[in-house]
Length: 124
Image (cartoon, rainbow, N blue to C red; front, side):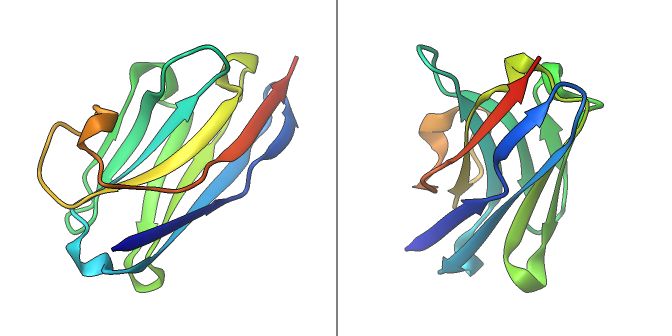
């Protein structure tokens, strides 16, 4: 089992920045990819970014490229999502997820473990 705990959400004005953290514990050696997803009210959960746990390769959805950066600290078993130039449409609950296998990383169905989420609200 892997446990994930997100932190760092909050209220920010448009154009501002936030950094989300996701601390993992348990069988972290089994993690292949860590991802961030978000879900706005009335919408489906959508892929935001992912990082290969060992190689550090990163992947982003088009709408956040150039504004968000995903990174990891293997020693701390923590993944970060640095968000900049935030827009009201970035408002959502942000979830951290972990996959233990090499699968399509943009599909939330391919992730095995999930955190409870952290709210990000961007005001205009």
